[in-house]
Image (cartoon, rainbow, N blue to C red; front, side, top):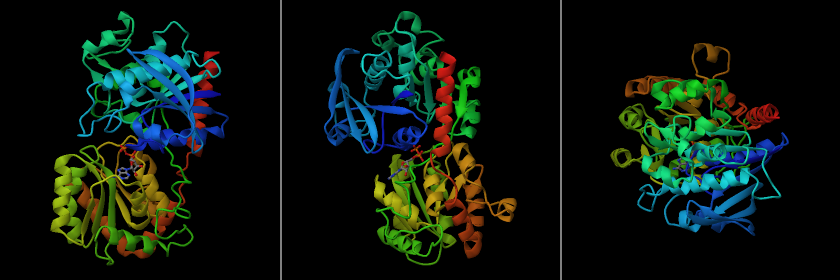
Length: 480
Ligand code: ADP
């Protein structure tokens, strides 16, 4: 089965969040099920610089007014197709924003052009390789199924995955005339969205199947609070909606072999873990005492509940805890955390940056990871935490609710608890769970059990990749 996966980021070439990890891990996980997946991404400068011996596959003459070249390369086991369209992607800044952090004003054109190129590949322009199915991710690739729908070539089955419905790619209706779509595409069955053009909406409307990254989030997005305007459309398509939880790359995230950490360890023997804890405390200037060391590795945003975290920092410190935060994001949240770090020297440390190796050391050394997200489609950091014996303390929402077994009375009695869940996501809700965490942390036997039960969880891609492969096979069989 040949599948074209299309996304705006892929690990290890370019990453701003969990999307890249998922897109990077899927092809390898799926190869065991006989799926040959090529992954298409834009040629941002960082991506282009990382390619070794790229081969030119195709020239696109008119991607919404600009030319583009499709390059193919191998990268750490991935087969990547890179769309080199300098007018769109060769510029400073990140994938979506300029160097000052502002959205590129032509993002609609950049990602519509990217999707259009994907649709042409789906239609067979490469000659030698035509996919049987396309799998697109998030709004940046969501126009691809819409381009297929309105093209003359018969469309092939498609899957769209929602990694975060908060990002929808909604633009002024004025852009419609430049999208190279027929006039009737601007309709409720097509790309029209509350009078605007909606990229994610268009994908959800036109893809053969919709997936999202956990069963709970699949239920949640049927409600207005989580669906963010798309709940009606998703409800209408609920028979095509699937919640498939993400896995993690258990080779990259393996405490027994991880090169980014101070000392390797395994579920059979956690004694070496304390060396990572000490190294982590050193990196953040924290006291090396017996109180629990909490970590946060996150975008510093409202979605992630970081304002709630700020409200409970005093409580963490008062109860003898320490906090190490790695992340960047909203200005006010960054400022409040920096202020907490200078108020509580030795108790709160802050690294206002993006640092992949440091994130490994934090999972390997902290006692618990705090994830107070208001909504969380899947979440990956709790899965890394489980794997590294860093106990997840999570909001009861989306994929967090699906992957962490709350240490309530029954779960402790059954010896299956792997972490802590709380709701609502308010300072009082979080204070309540922290009191329990502090209490159980004192009970070293129980705490170690929770760590080890977490480390034994299957957080690999194996089962979820099988579910994707089954979904693909079902769509292809239906198409015959
Ligand atoms: P989201 O994609 O919504 O940001 P996820 O939990 O799904 O959240 O994925 C976040 C990914 O980004 C994880 O791999 C996490 O380790 C990583 N990450 C987030 N912030 C940082 C940071 N400041 N430094 C290093 N890695 C980070």
